Length: 284
Image (cartoon, rainbow, N blue to C red; front, side, top):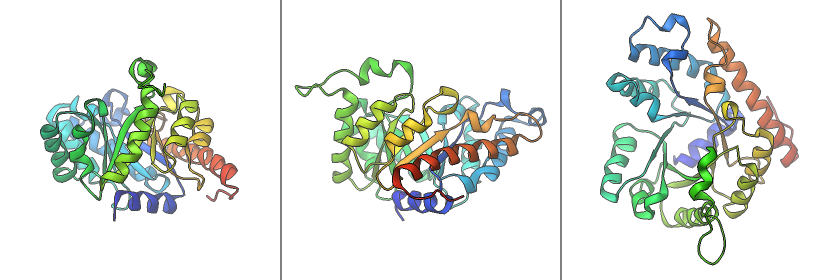
């Protein structure tokens, strides 16, 4: 199965476009985890979050930076945590990688080959040849940073290009649709929920590409507007990612139950908009 197949299957199975980010911050773990070693604490915390939410989500998304911050034990915890995710649920490594072509090939061999992630995020700043090694994997997904959720994203992403006057992010969305035709991997885009109007323009420019949507929850992106502007006519094509607002919904003994409640609430909000747009009743 391709990444697109696996994702579509889990979206249908869980009736969900929600992605839980696995971004461990040991300083925010419940007290019971703080006596454990770094690797064990991260793995056991992630295990609880995964077990509590796996049936509610379309995928999980660990962010590499949070694991690197914990040194070798953090990387060990990342690989071990990936193994805890049920095999039917895709895992996107949020690494925002971008480097020269031969170095990119080494990253691709590591992230896809050695570590076995289903998809990665990539930074397109160095151009197509820097992404080509990732795009060559026919069964994987490659999510290209397009219009990111941070306040300073417009410094470069909103600059007009060529004679069209399109901002960089729209030109990139157009280019990504061509990469989807030219390469075997599933190409997607990363667009922040903090810019729902820009998301609508990007969806019009790239009507079929999957879009990874960070920025809800702690970054206070507009969930309803973003989902309305970002889903396809079929009510899919969007991966609504939330990390801190789910992982740290509670910090007591019931933290996993709180995480499940938070994930379920986001799924319900997203599905309500899906039902409104498609005219189909959102099921539980």
